[in-house]
Length: 320
Image 1 (spheres, rainbow, N blue to C red):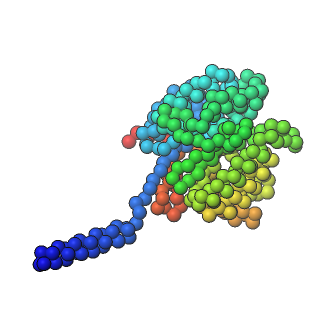
Image 2 (tube, helix red, strand yellow; image 1 turned 90 degrees about the horizontal axis):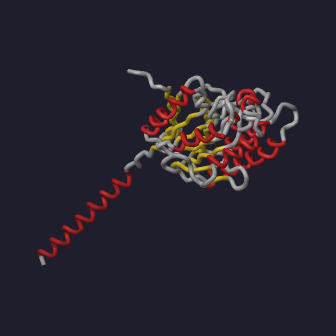
Image 3 (spheres, rainbow, N blue to C red; image 1 turned 90 degrees about the vertical axis):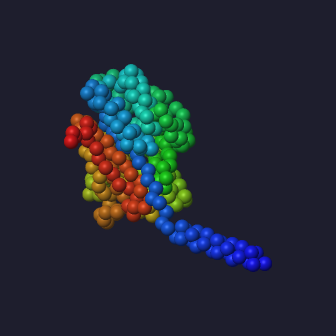
């Protein structure tokens, strides 16, 4: 009886101890989760940049990013839009050791009608890009990232998840979104723009529905945030910025827009509400661009109130 009683006391003590440890562990704060991604754009524009880009992509992969995104313009605006250039860039991007997402810019389709670009038909060049870069539901790169594409013809519009953040790509090129040179928009713009706006609203709705903490929008053009806030919107981007402002104001998390086009590496908050007040949950990230090479690392930190932070890295890196 004594031995049985001692066993019972020991068992009760052990259970109480285990319960106390479980309560203490549950009370500890969850460990922070970190995700990283690399951003480039408007590169390569020269033979020197073409020679350096594989080295830069290798260095970005070595920094343990979950993916690399190229925000459009993979050649100089004065260079030809020949198949050989497109195939070279496809091979270059597909050789990335990190999953690689390419988003189209004007230099590789809408501007290809220029004589010094080869005098191509713009939509024919866009279709060629679709065949090479967006023909399935995966990213480029040696390691693949699963992508969900917008149903229909605009397969360059894609989305994917990284932690608590939704990433969304758009065909929104520089050059006033291919509006054209007159006051009347081009037929191509009229056909594409409704799909762009629908994709924008659909993905904000998805992010709200799934209670995500952030959404990152990726497109090539600088849509003229400041001009829009001053009441002088660019015709090709006006509808997009109106919808972006509405959706950002109705989203409880953080919104990031990543673009290239004007070749100024910067991180700021240029989006304003209708009264001109800064919208604080919105951040613009513009990538490096010719003639300055570099890349931007985005970090998602689950414990940070701002959720995102961004670090710029010039290339080649400065020597110690």
